[in-house]
Amino acid sequence: MNGEQDLSINLARADQALIDRLRAGDESIFTQMVDQYHASMVRIAAIYVNEYAVAEEVVQDTWIAVLKGLDRFEGRSSFKTWVFTILTNRAKTRATRESRYIPLELTDEPDGGTSINNDFHVPVNIDTSAYEHGWIPPSWDTIPETRLLGHETRDVIFRTIDALPSNQQQVIRLRDIDGFSAEEVCNMMQLSESNQRVLLHRARGRVRQALDVYFAQE
Amino acid sequence: MAHDLSCQELANLLTDYLEEALPDDVRGKFEEHLEHCGYCVAFVDQMNWSIKLTHDLGSPPSPAPGHDELLKLFRDWKSDQS
Image (cartoon, rainbow over all chains, first blue to last red; front, side):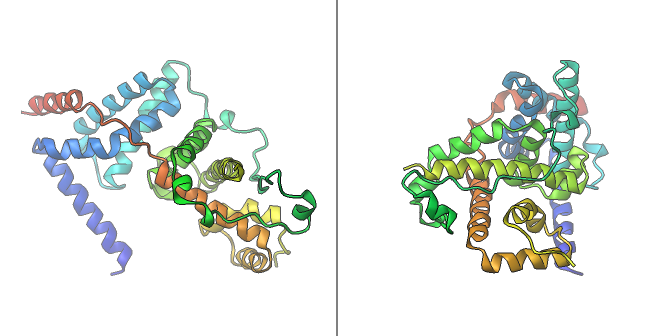
């Protein structure tokens, strides 16, 4: 048996234990789940419904659906993926009802390509001829930690992600913030592997570009 | 056999590279390009940093969700069960 199988068996056991405790009415496991997932869930729902209060409602409805549907969980995905899939479907339904939901392909940029910006922001004190003659941008390794991990860096990341088309936003949040695998995100969003990569690629490209501009400022 | 990659082509393939989705010959060209191009090394380095920072800073310390309301949901569900 290989390590990957071990891991998925352990995960399945942990999920089963969690479901058993929920069924038994264990409030501590429920609040633990809420602490772990709730904030991420609200952010994902908000991509579709736009209003925070509505996103909160969608998440509450999702929790109810999860509890009522415990018997239907078959373990074909992880429990967490199952919860987020229910969430995504409910958020879409709610957005459609309020005519906010624009199908995936229409929200995307018209170019449909995978081209991303690989330019670096050249600080004003750099002679552009140096840039043309092989100037290499400074590495972020040398940025002091207080700046690298500071509030402003966080703000740049948030603002950039919030401004992305909704499907790119959802993919980068699920992959890079919430830590879902590519396969899980494909299942959740009903995307092909290559479409998932294109959306992730564009989203990551935007964030890198925004951070580059920010870090290049003195 | 894949042709030599330009810097823009390398940038366009970066996510496919990181996701291990490139065919072997293209992956070879990708790594070969990085061996002699400081510009692209810097680009890939920034992208790796950017992914790490998104992960580390991306989930804001959000106010703890209102447990009261959610616990009420849980208790209601529980009492419907029994």
